[in-house]
Amino acid sequence: MLYANRLKIGMGPNSVEMRLSDFNRLRWTVQALLWQPQLLNHAKSQTLDRIQVTDTSYLLSRPHAPLPKGCVVVMWDGLNSSAEFAAARPDLATRTDLSYLYVGHLAEIATGFPPNSVPLFPCRIPALSKAEIRVRLPAWFKVAAAVRRRIRPIKNARLSPLAHRRLTQGGCLVFCGVVRPSAAVLDGFLLGVSHPDLREKLQPLVDLEWQVPPSRIAKALHESYDHLRGHQLRSTEDFSAFYSILSLMYRMGTLSNVSDMSSALLINEYGIDPHLDPYDADAYGRNLFIDFGSSRGPGIVYPRTVDIWQTRKQIISLRFLHPEQSLSDYLAANDARAFLAQCLAHSEIALSELSRLPAVSQRF
Image (cartoon, rainbow, N blue to C red; front, side):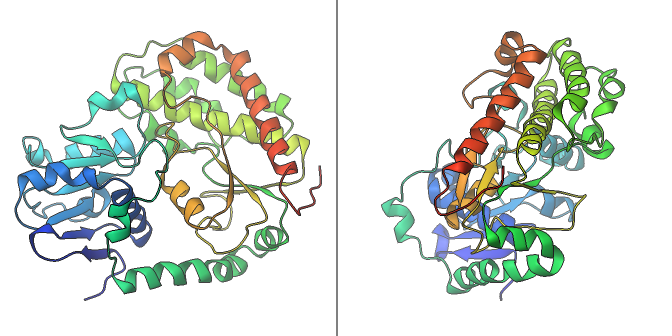
């Protein structure tokens, strides 16, 4: 029986049965397992039956669903997903047979995850392996993914016609996702932090208008950065929250500079603009896509990287924190002025890369 969020790979005791919360997450998990089949090693050591893979979103919608021995659970929102799932399913706290795959790796928060937790995605996109070539995915899954890529531009044209037209013409510097935090997003980031005064101090970031000259948002970003830098990082929740908040501040600072310097910027803010998803579309190849990574960690590979890689789009990866750098070291070495200067420098790098895009005319 065919379900949009379910997939079975292989036969018998070596098979993998996947049941994710939606088709996108199913696609991303399949690709992660193709890149890193060793992610299932712990599960294989725990069960002789087929391995089941699911995610916390699916399980939270079914709070009493039993988890079979050796089950693999994906956590899409990093430490936040882990905390939410632990609160909802305390009965699983002593289960050592389970393994967890999380998005958003940051060295300082690794100890906050349950035992047998590892990042879902590799540090870099690996070369195609012989093992990956040998895996036979069901035909319906390949067809469904291909059809989705083909019809996405049609949906985009209907839901956001102006953005679709610009993307089709080409020459845009593109980012779609969260830029500024809403009150709910900021509350979620700060869940479990050891500094209750931060929420009020960071209120100016909520719904901050960033598409203005950088000088107009510099004060809010400068003050918020100083507030974060003035607090000691005491727990894994602190590290996770500080990284997530800084990642959105970095997006606002960088995109504000780009917007001020060029009309080529095309932004679709999640939850604010009409829905637009160009990443998994077989179109829009004559644009440059900004990849800020996950707001949960600085890893080079995360879900949207999979889409951009599969559709062979032009990409520029920008991070305020190097994946191998400590967040504590970054905050110690960089004051607010250095942070804002980094935003400016990275905006100039993005526009420089856009100018090199072949056969595209830009309007700067």
